[in-house]
Length: 305
Image (cartoon, rainbow, N blue to C red):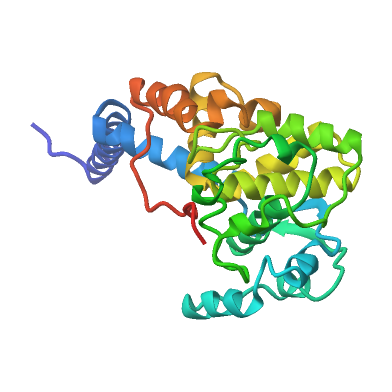
């Protein structure tokens, strides 16, 4: 029996190497796609990729400006700059320069939302939402004996007054005509947020008040109802990044659609963006198909300053 030639040995070893290589990656593929841990890893990667696409670090610019509204909030005492600066100094957070300029100038610079500016914008728009005087706010569910007890009113403590209820519907800041009020009112009744179960019109928390402030700014600057929904969705994306990346995952994996294909009005509706709608129509359906990503550190700002 003749020996194995060096050539035959190398060919055989090469074949064994290719086989081992294929076997290794086949096992890895099977692990990722057929075991619970592997599936969870894939889901987590999809979730994080969606979040990166939806929430670019460079942010998104809205076709809406403060146009002096922030300055008026300071002049009327709704925002006390001493309290504002003290808060962020304690937190060791630097207020973006362009945001600081809106307190002292009639800034026409478009609002830019990104991971850094989002929490500062939330607080400015919150003050705007609770304080701006409108006709529809006379019918607000906040009106009544409980006015000072809501997170939106009682929680606002960065004004000269101790309780934000003192400013509710009191400051003439953004003036809306009848048609603009109607547009804001309709959008406010249709837009929800995942931290609560009420619409923006029932602004019982900071996110509701902030959204209402943003809608009023946009309407006063001639934006249509659909444009207000589009701006509102961008704001909610940065205020609730984990929630909306899960909503995007739901549309991608269960409805085979991109979040950006869905009308902003529908994404912001009670069905997906309210607290109960998010849990029932997004979280529960993702979980039923083993598509719910693991919990990560929540980066959304809570319902307080």
